[in-house]
Length: 111
Length: 113
Image (cartoon, rainbow over all chains, first blue to last red; front, side):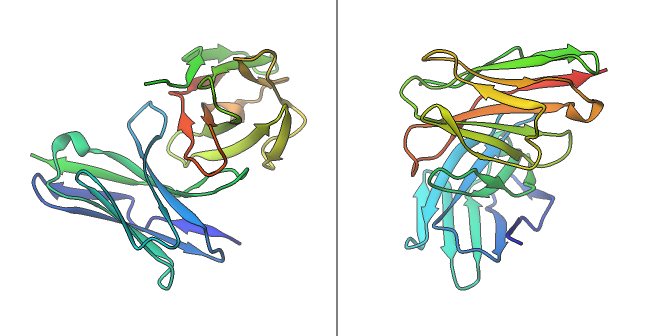
C-alpha cells in the first residue's frame, strides 16, 4: 500500500543550527509533495510545495528537496529559532485527491 | 489574508446525539475537505467535495457522516449518531484550484461523553 513516512518523531536542535527533516514515500510516485507546519491545537499551515520535476525549492529560511530516485524529500530550516518549534508534516496529494499526511516530526529549537 | 473559519472551537456531545460542525471556506475556493485528527495521531482524510457533490471519501466516512454546502459560504459535516471514538479534532480545508495547496481552519475539538 502507499505509504508516506517521517522517520523521526522528534528532533531537538540548538538555536542557530540547521534543522533537517526527512520524508520517505513508498509504492507511489507523487506529482508533488507538500510541507505543513502544525502548532498545538491549531490546523496545519501550508509552507512549501515541490513538484517532481523540481530538485529544490526555497522560501526565506526554508528549503525543500525532492529526490525521486531515493523517494525522499528533505525539509531544511536554516538559522533555526525557538519560534520554529512545531510539528512539521510531509504530505502528498493532488488534483481532486485528498492530502495524505505523514505522522509528523516534532521540532524543538533550544535557545 | 483570507482564512478558513470553523465553529464551534469545542463541541461536547453525549454519545448517540447528532452533531453538526460548521466551516466557512475561503470565498473563491472551489474544493472543500474534512479531515480529523485523533489526539496524538496523524491528520486523516474524511471527505472531499467539489461541484456540489462528494468527489472522494475514506473508509472512516460511513453512513453516519454527511456533508453539505447549504449556501454559497458554509460547508458542514454532520455526524448522525456519535460514538466515543468520534472524539477528535475535525479540520475543514479548502483550495482554489486542484493544483494548489489546501488551506486549513483551526479545527473543532469534538468530545463525545
